[in-house]
Image 1 (cartoon, one colour):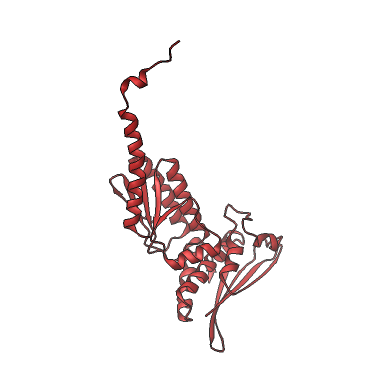
Image 2 (tube, rainbow over the protein chains, first blue to last red):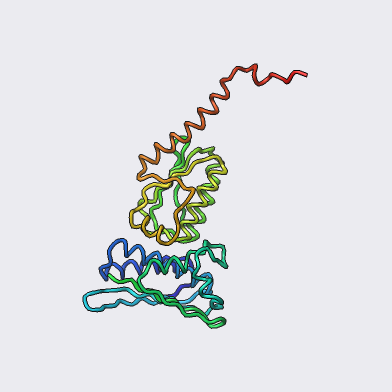
Length: 126
Length: 141
């Protein structure tokens, strides 16, 4: 999915909700991953100058999961540790986007290189 | 552009968010609401989010901003009807909406606002009812 406007951020939320329901996530887990998706999609838009969101349905034995990958070719993050810290922001936000999203999912992975872009992958399991 | 309707009920403004808010809609609500408060002299704002399925940090900040702006315009804001899953997620995200009054439902929110705004008016009335002479007393020299 493209992430180019605040409408796209909303579309990502709706699609993630539909997939989370299909994967059998509980209501609270649905809410958590949709909220994380909203934060990360907004980061892609605001910090990465837009990018893409990829949704993947996972199955590991009896467990089902939902993996989301947000990727942009923006300026990248200079200091990931700092970017993950609550309250740190380069935009006018609250600085809760990255660190907050990490707390809302089971697995969190971030790759970023200055001048090349950023890729964040999150997974929530049933 | 679409707008979130703001209803007037006496001295209160009632806002029910029934759509998934994109960022510009949230900002438009913030602007519309502050304008309406100043136009109507409303003393309270009831923000019903019972249909809202997620509140992320942007929306959370917008809610806090609305409450702060309303307060500066002498109006109290009560956020009502937050879903349990939204509350759990908000706190884990790191947002506690500090400074924002909440109530479980519209009825309780209305009561809270009535109390808050009545108390303020009682204080005003009490001031107005003090003997007129008091205000005119000039210090003896």
